[in-house]
Amino acid sequence: MGKRKSKAKSAPKKRMDKLDAIFSCPFCNHGTGVECR
Image (cartoon, rainbow, N blue to C red):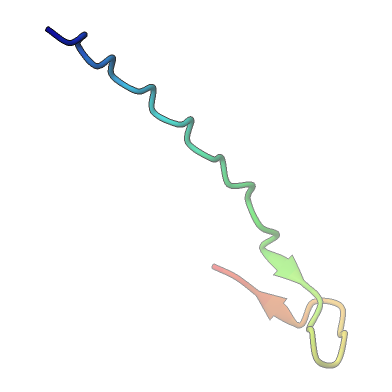
């Protein structure tokens, strides 16, 4: 008889860092060119 397979531990969930709500435009580099809601 074989051994029972042990249940593999699930990988920890990756935590996403919050992105900035307002940042400079990637094209013209204007100060508050892009705003997220």
